[in-house]
Length: 177
Image (tube, rainbow, N blue to C red; front, side, top):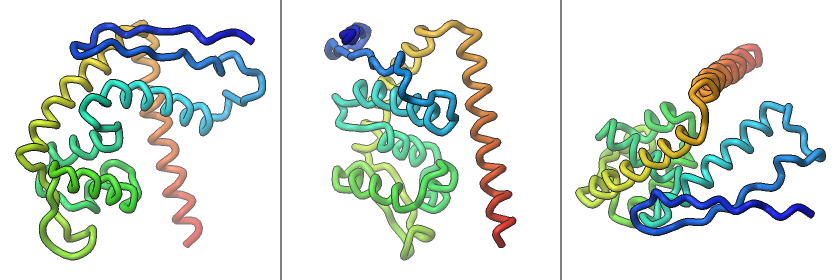
């Protein structure tokens, strides 16, 4: 069996992190032509990379995404944020509970997710600023690891795939009614 290569990422200011290259890339047992499995696998690889970079802040991608959404839309409701992020409200509520327990986010207002308004606490704003720096460095590292044409084509493809999947889901739901 081929041993996975070790990739070192040294541009982090706080410590050196070692990543193992996934050895499944050459597998003939998995169907990488399926859009669902390929996009989920890609998402997991990117998420794992970002999670590793955010670990010193004790944040994961989902939590930081929620922090960013709240920072960019302070006072918004959970329902509006979940709709904008294409997340189920229960998933968002679970991540919100973690952030509330840490004193990073506070929710005020009405009952239920539709009436609950969320804001960052002063500690949450500090954490968001620190996380934003790491997020930008991580995103930049990924961009530098790809050639410009692949990066542009990938962004276009992902946007088109997202749009097509959402349009087809809405069409399926309207046909079911």
